[in-house]
Image (cartoon, rainbow, N blue to C red):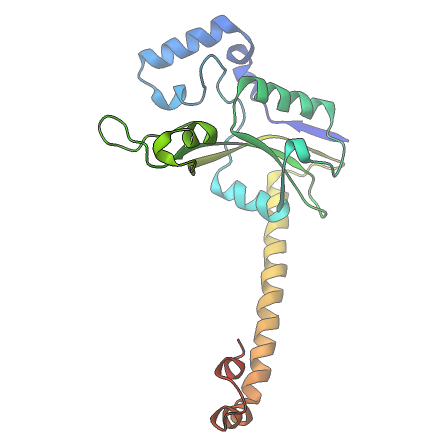
Length: 221
């Protein structure tokens, strides 16, 4: 079994040392770096895992379309090293939720941490939209009627494991091949069906005009 831990070791000092974390936050605050400060909540450390950009997201979603909350995942045993990373992120409250993305086909499962904000009718003093870090907090506002809309969703790759871990270039090629195979197959099937209907258009059109065929049948819907 192979395991890839995506923890950024260069952030280990602020992740595990309280004094270093406090200094990091103080320096970021002094520099007005709100974006950096937003990567951590309360006394917790910033997210030490790589952000999943749109390209990465499409590759992983294509190859691992089945998404399960980590607490409910039961396809295969999760290695101890992976469990430790999940436990660390839960303790540090890095994410709103942690999911396992997997598939019956290759490649192997990945752990994805997700952050987001929630909003509804709540407003700040300047009448701007008020955002909440958790769905529960947003729903609890009297003016929100127990409803919360999710926005500003960001995903991070925490770890992955399996018998064989391919590099991202190979994963991208596999994803491309799968999209071509799946979408191409559906398009070819659609073309064949429509071609067959086109051959019968004159006969079917007569049936439609005579009232023995509905319009949706003629159009193949």
